[in-house]
Image (tube, rainbow, N blue to C red; front, top):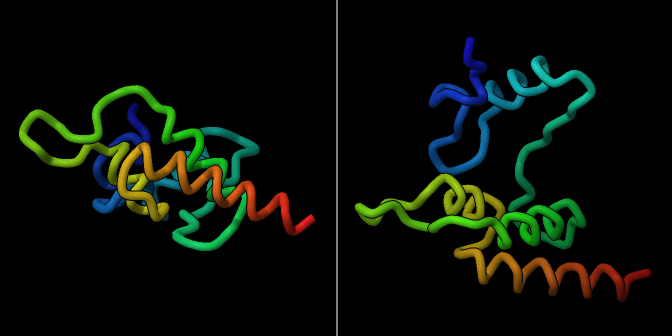
Length: 100
C-alpha cells in the first residue's frame, strides 16, 4: 500500500507536500511532526532545509525543461536554484549567529 505522501494527492503542485501528504507521512512514521515550508525570514529551520537541499544530487530540470520536484521544493522555500539555496542558507546562518 502506497501512502498519500508518495502519491500525487499528497504532493503540492508547487513543491513539497500538502497538508494531506504531511498527515499521511506522520501517521506512517510515529513521532514525526512535519511542518509547512517557511518561505521567508531567518528561521533556522529554513536555513537547514536550504543547505540540505542545495547539496542534493540530481538535476533541477527534467529533459523536457519542466522543473523537478527538487526545484519545486526549493522554490516553495524561497530559493530559485540549488546555488541560490546554498547562498541563502549561509546568509541566514550568519545573520542568526550574529543575533546571539
